Image 1 (cartoon, rainbow, N blue to C red):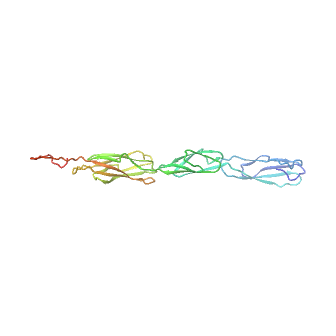
Image 2 (image 1 turned 30 degrees about the horizontal axis):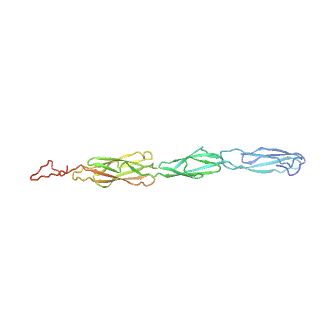
Image 3 (image 1 turned 45 degrees about the horizontal axis):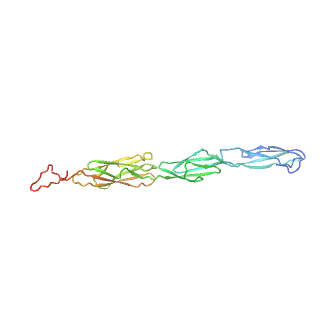
Length: 287
């Protein structure tokens, strides 16, 4: 700052905040004195902007320079000081999951590094980052030098039915069992229905016809019990298809089939008698 003309006497100039952003202040050169000798030699006024971590608004302030002394009144001069804010927001978008940020703040100083760790909701898994972070690294670090936005992308798990056996033997008049579970965590309860699909009508589901798997117990096997009715009229070992079907969760789950082979316990007794006969007691076709 300087004067435009030589004054008749000393002139004292005061530089002070007039209005606007209170974070801006005169830190040096608030009072300057110009004499008839040094009137044209510039003197420096230094402004400061306080660190403010609570907002990222770039405010402005009016600095008023006023003078007293000399012969005639001197008009004030105003300088506009625009604050350049170094606080930036980091926006996180996460659907079907969440993201932990470390450190966790509303605003970050320029130069800060934020670590992001994704957590998927039940039934989903983390895929990758997009926006101001890319790739699938976990955790990922984001350097703050401006306002940033990062999206964490999640996808539904590929849930399928799993059975311990795809073929079981069921003794006539007895039972056999197999276990059912899910291959991955579902987003919601999944109901599995186990029923006779086709084939030997003597084979049926005697227990475990309806199973419920939750996001907490999806990987804990549940047992299905099959029964084969006693049939004294034939000695054929039939088979049946048991169909396991699921409903619930996010995506459709394919059916799984189990083959139940009946082990028949009825046997024929053939009698051969030449030049005579044989009486059998009891007299049955099958035993």
